[in-house]
Image (cartoon, rainbow, N blue to C red; front, top):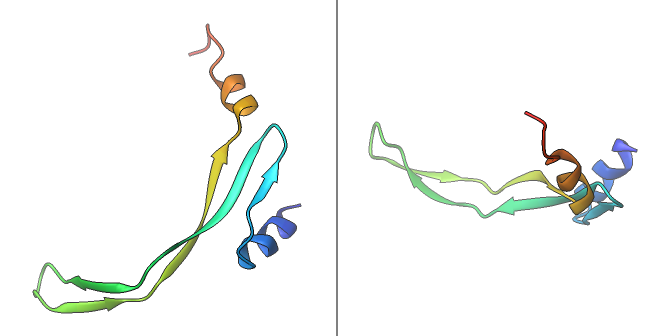
Length: 68
């Protein structure tokens, strides 16, 4: 199952698992940043990561009154 999710994220697709949540691949654009130690401008490449957004059923199940 995780292999299928990984493949879909690599292709840029969002994966939704019913009553659990959704996985999405996010991208941060490339850009120039400043090295705070030297003051030199450094070029940062674009980065990608996987994000998870919990579904309503999962959130409601975790927030049961009386726990914690």
